[in-house]
Length: 97
Image (cartoon, rainbow, N blue to C red):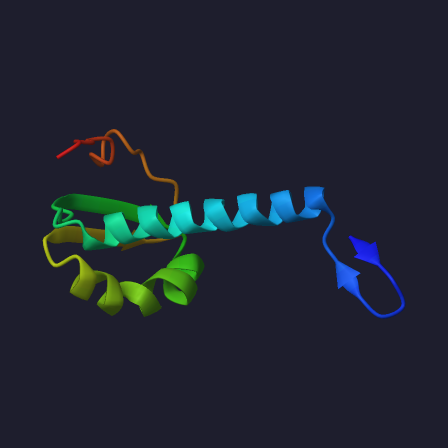
């Protein structure tokens, strides 16, 4: 930055930095728009186990919004403060559909 008592201007390096940042932000916005307009819908069963306090405070209040945005997701939430054997409870099946 070049500063005088009456003005504040960018140096050539500052202007280059500013333009680079603007370009990056435009690219991020374009990428996000591509993902939001994508017709791909999430489909699958999602099983989640979490501590009850976190589930009640953070996750459950957002469930209606999530289900309206992703109606094809079969969501199964388990709340509890016990340790879960993820293999026995079949929490390990992943697919890339």
